[in-house]
Length: 92
Image (cartoon, rainbow, N blue to C red; front, side, top):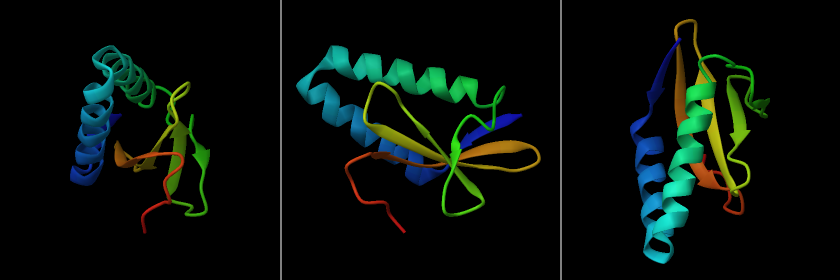
């Protein structure tokens, strides 16, 4: 199964990593590694995330960090839709 990032999700990840890096370069490296671990897991375990109120979207927590990844499954790919801090209100 192929993994793809929506432009918005890629920009949100970049923005979060830049924010963390400005305060802790080591923290940003750890966060990036955790995001990569989770996104590498998804093609092997596409149902790892929990269902959301939108039946087409699943969500996985970037534990131990307070970030959420929303993604959609299709027959051939996983699309990372959004990346946000858990304390922030979801975007429409």
